[in-house]
Image (tube, rainbow, N blue to C red; front, side, top):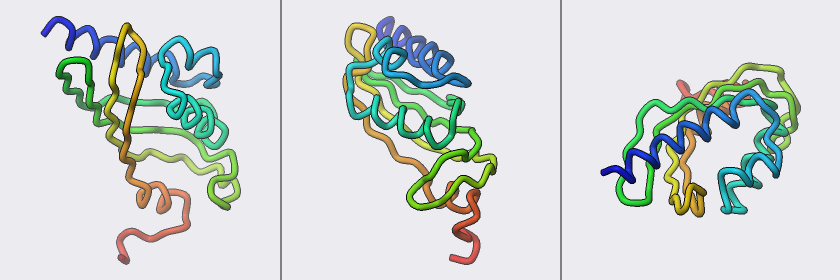
Length: 128
């Protein structure tokens, strides 16, 4: 149970450290060895610069932490052919981290992309 609590504290520290700042390779290296996660974070920061991560619920077992969270930001970069709208976004996601020696070594994530597309003005979720 002690390790699980330490892993949750690590994830909260990580969320705080990468929120409201430019996400660089150097910053990512402080918290992870997962190259795919690094690339994803840096890519999303080019679209929603300085985006914020907000943990809403966390569960931990062994070296894994599951987080139900939100991402908040402003659309300032091209995203899948969608030019910057300068609209605020706030959408949910769930992410699972594998943590070893205070580094994220693996992850998987599910995000509600329909809510994101609706907030960017390119989809109407209610009509579907």
